[in-house]
Length: 552
Image (cartoon, rainbow, N blue to C red; front, side, top):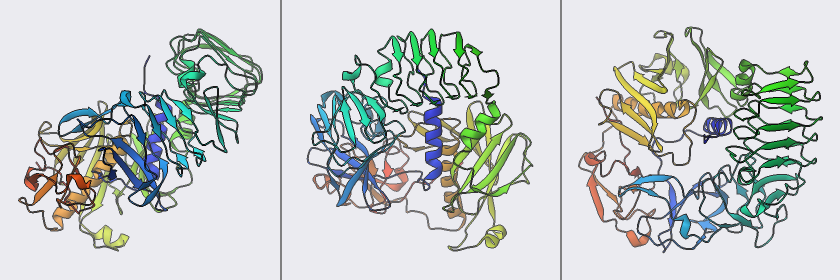
């Protein structure tokens, strides 16, 4: 019954990509390395605060029992914990092979320092071996998108907190009476009298219950709160509940569902993939989302309640974040799908594609002046064209008169295919080994480029990752055609052979811990795609040259 949490993670990941600035194809993290070889990777927010994005140690380093996160990173105050920062489950590929980022089993606790105000979505995703997490008194915001999937830690506020409390193992926001997380110590306790149960808040709780009964104080139940609960026999939803979110109580072994009078809205797929067959839906229910009882036989006591169609569901979910965006360009030249170039309030552009069955996909941000190519349109392709060699500050008229590269997007057998229509090159795009592979179709085992999106779930049809890869490809090809000088193949590059993940132009790069400087590992730019070095990422601190895409 184990599955990825579909609605929750797909929507979060696709829309997170859509709202961010374009991510470079290869990302070199900012990082601080202490004397214990602990790597604290971070990025900066718009105010210059640091967001912790990753914690790891090189293979062979001794794991400290207490992970003391610094309150300052290179002079920037740490203000937030980002997605998967303490993931101890998934592996990454280092020059020494696949390894975990750190040994969670040897950790006694993680200490988040005073000054941190925010836990972003997925902050403690898969920190599943860590027994205790200390949170600061300065914490003011925990994302309502789940922060603790895969975590099994007790939570403590050693210095107290004005807004959050731990009550019998339940992490509660006192301001909104919202439940965010259940520690192992909560498993034998009744659910607290809260108003809201946020997304995936009960994953550490429902799994251990035979009967899951919601108190009559609860008004909202978020997504994925009974997911994969194989011991569950009965779910009792109180009449105080105004809304069950999409996927609220799906995918479990319950054979009995009791819905009490008073419930108003039941979200899409809320009770799908369960063992209960006959489910009585009370007369108070006014709206039922698409597929709410997909595997059951509901008895509706209110036959006039509104029931969402699949097309309505797709429109509601996939268009929610783009409803007010400007449509720059659309086309009816693609019979099986409707593509649109859309622009958000920050002037960033995206490709939105609506399929014939109503499904909608949203790309990552697109390069400037990207347009749809109707001339080469067909029933199975989406085409975009990208101008070549435009000077900085060029306008749309200059872009229209410029030479263009043409790309096709085609969905085949669970993968998106990307073809450079201009030069006849074909690339496939698929998930592999926890990363994203962008392969030459004709020589798939030889020419492969990887983006180490360490904490992104590769979801849906990988559409956002594909367009990110396409952007990188177009930029490289445009640079080549514009006559940008190529990197000297004999240029020396430097790395730390004891577990470093970056390659550098400067052996004394300031991003490297002083104990490893000057860097002892050296190779040439022409060797960058050799098996020993292709896993390394580009350091932008010292201006190291990026890889270029392999050519046919």
